[in-house]
Length: 256
Image 1 (spheres, rainbow, N blue to C red):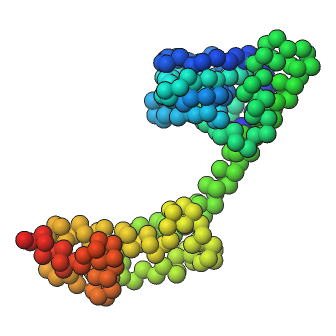
Image 2: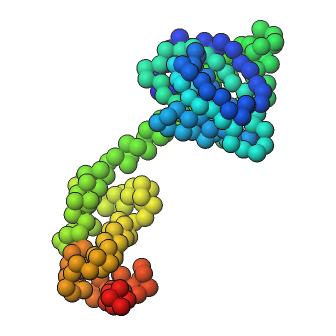
Image 3: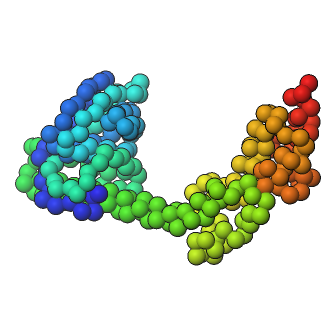
């Protein structure tokens, strides 16, 4: 979004304490709002952004939203209103942790722009472009991460369709993506927070519990096969490891 904007012009800058609540209809200009203290929420109807100290919110021109303070402490801000030609602007929030000039933006920008010398106004323009470059870099990294995650989509689609198949081979999933098994597992963990094997076991054992609770089975071996285990003993061990009780004893407790 911020890597393709033109005709940028700073219109105004202000600072102060946010109102407890306000409702904005069809915002006139684009805005970058830096949170100096406290926390607030921007509710755009389909999405809510919570913005806290050290973060910045982008609100596109034409947006309608509800704004409210959600922290007990006063919520201080500085805002920069600007015009620009965006391809497809959407509300977004970013952290300023890695922006080296964040202190200058938060503490000096409004006064420098409103009542500063011409040299200070030039400094504001430089700071503003540096801020846009910083946001653009964040978006580029996020896009790269998404692209990285997307590479394993063929395996994820296959996994979801065959997760209860006894013939499922975890060490073959990477072949569907054209990458090494090591790289596949690394991306999988980054995306789901767990290994492929643990993900599969979790889904299978949860499904097994649902089957046992329903009573719609004849034997534990039948339950094991239904969730992808050809070895009932291996299934029982995995089930007990998660729930602390064997599937047979869980079934007895339900029947009693």
